[in-house]
Image 1 (cartoon, rainbow, N blue to C red):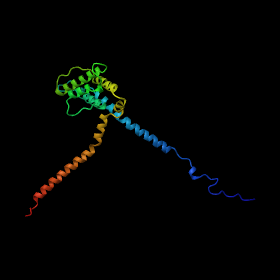
Image 2 (cartoon, rainbow, N blue to C red):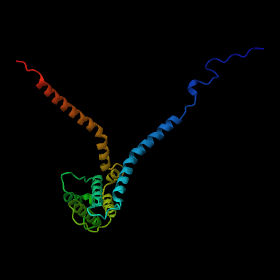
Image 3 (cartoon, rainbow, N blue to C red):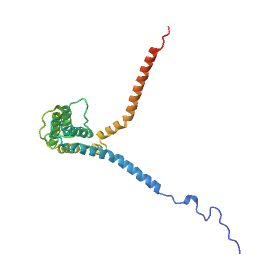
Image 4 (cartoon, rainbow, N blue to C red):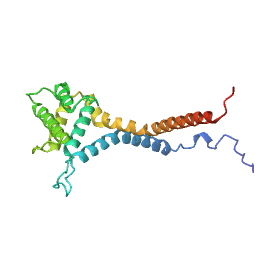
Length: 218
């Protein structure tokens, strides 16, 4: 009987290139990329929300009735007001007084027009400013509405008067929080710079002293 011919190379055999491609690595990389992007976008929003709640939900300690106790609520509410205005395009400057900053915020288009739908926000900014000034200069505090409620009124007014791009930035990439992160990331470099400056001064001082001890040539 005739012997069956052996199959020729490349015929009747699967080619190496026809092997099934495993899609899971690509899928895993895509999912990881989506998670990283989501974390990048969500983290500033979450951090900003946590900071706001921590500022506005602090309760007085047990010894708050003792003489000399200084309520931190007005200062915390003022810090939140400054960050909130920064997020919506009206940042404060170190050189201006609280009253000047308050007047600039209330005169800006970001807060809307006083006397209309945004009148409550203007009154809230004015009362938060008064509370902070009384706390700073040690004046007698009067009973005022909740700082959290007044901040909520201001935030709602800022959102209603802002363009959608400003609202998106304030929600997901708030400038006040991003500035903190940039400052924190630059801290190691500033420390290295200060160390290098101090080292250079120490070397220069030591060299001047050493020169003073060496015999002078005539």
